[in-house]
Image 1: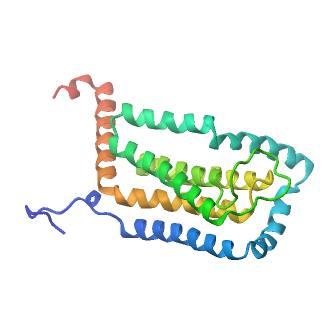
Image 2 (image 1 turned 60 degrees about the vertical axis):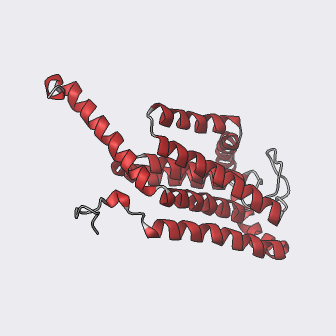
Image 3 (image 1 turned 90 degrees about the horizontal axis):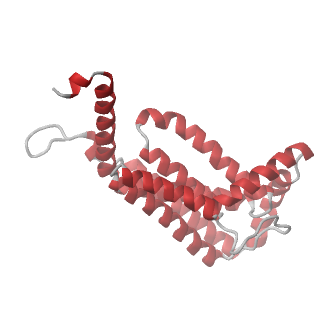
Amino acid sequence: MTDDGGEQASPSSRRPRALGIVGGTLVLLVVTAGGLLRLDQQRWARLDDAASRAIGDADPAVDTVADVLSQALDAFDSWPGYLLIAAMLGVLALQRRWWHLAAAASTALGGVITSQLIKLWVDRLRPEGTQVDTHDASFPSGHSTLAACFVVVVGMCLGSAARRWWWPTGGLLLVAMMLSRVHVHAHWLSDTIAGALLGIGVGMVVWWAMYPQLERELLSEEHRTDVGARAGKNPRAADR
């Protein structure tokens, strides 16, 4: 593929089709699951019950650690989590990475709004014995959605080398969030799976939509960082 001047088009100018297709499919899958759940909540509750009991009723030592972790992760969908997201947006603004700032904000807002709309539509009851404050319906998990959006946004902002270590790290954080919400009986397991898939899907769709601009901005940032590093090692080279 060439541009008007006959030169090979930059790979960063092409949107990966799979990114949009997979992301859109994940969102559609969650909406479809929500529709099925809305038709028969009792059947889904029976399927979820065994998994929820296994996660919620752990060994006492494990249970203590899980309680501490769950309380810490519960704050992610309140002001500490919002401050973390605001700090990330602030860093992107200071770096003048406006496309990444727009993508991060769009992913967070898209995830929250989509999650809330599905919650209102499905209106699933939460498990009994919830150990944390809850204020809306159960499906999908808002905490899991926001955590998944966070994982995708961080990966979106990192270079290819850093992404290799971030994806497994972010995946572990997301799984910890999902299990913690089941452990404190705030959600059924299927709620957290749906929330994670929704957040990942929204993030992938936003990434696909802004992919050319994001990649060009990322390459520009990596170039500036590389020039700055070389200038620090050899000031004379920076003047050439």
